[in-house]
Length: 160
Image (cartoon, rainbow, N blue to C red; front, side, top):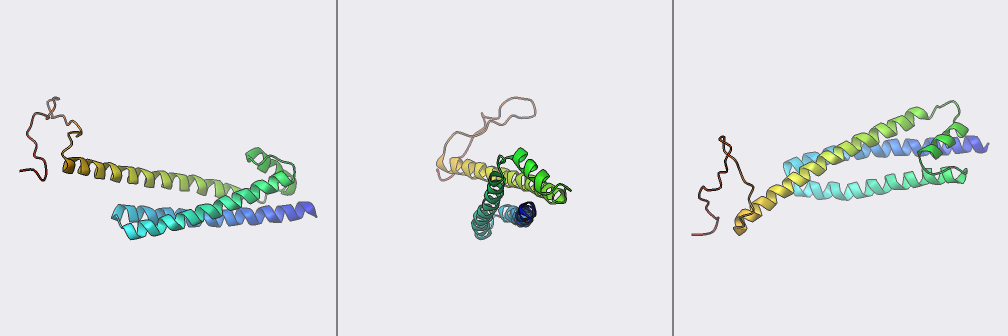
């Protein structure tokens, strides 16, 4: 009976994790759209939701790790595999586990994409601020002949 109860508990956790990852994936897509549109209200809204969803996913992961430890297994991938081979010998939970792994990878890739967009936006803002401040920390631009165009005159915004 303990084996069946553990299998049901693990099945429930994996199902919750898959659903949470689907929601997180959709959120990351919405976040990308908000970032691309520079819609600050949507960016802030998705940031709050992101924190909530990450908290929920972390809680599910901790429950799964606790289930592994409860049965004397490590709380890492080999421990989960050992737990699954004991409580789910026919491998009926493997498709859900595989779905979770694939979704987590997609979420990581989407998060990296969003992070790259944020980084590019911040660099753009920093360059604009440098121009407004009159700082000469500008990127050197080379012309088609391979030499610097740095000798050209520059006008500092706000200066007469």
